[in-house]
Amino acid sequence: MTDVVLDKTTIWTVIIVLGIGSFGLRFLFLGLVGDRALPDWLMRHLRYTAVSVIPALIAPLVLWPIATQGQTDPLRLTAAMLCLAVALITKSIYAAMGVGAAVMIAGAYLM
Image (cartoon, rainbow, N blue to C red; front, side, top):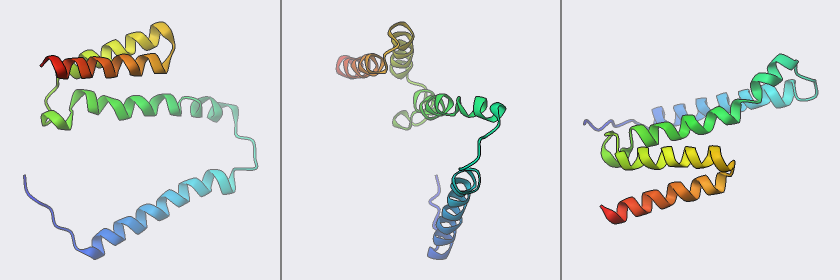
């Protein structure tokens, strides 16, 4: 893998552009639309945003973990499946996280 070296101007340009973009997106919803009621169809879609973000963050960590150089790990898949099963059965995020953590710790200890 090759090392990418960026000069300070490029790094600061990227940081500033991303900051302006982030501010612009927030200002659009909070500053311009914040005092108006949003349409029902948009509110229906926004309701699922939080539900879709968590799997999008977790799936790459389970399927292509950095710790195994991108190779799928049976221990992580097992922990994820048991975590999902416990979450569906108990409807408790804490129980699901506890089972996932216990499987990962026990698997690391046994291996």
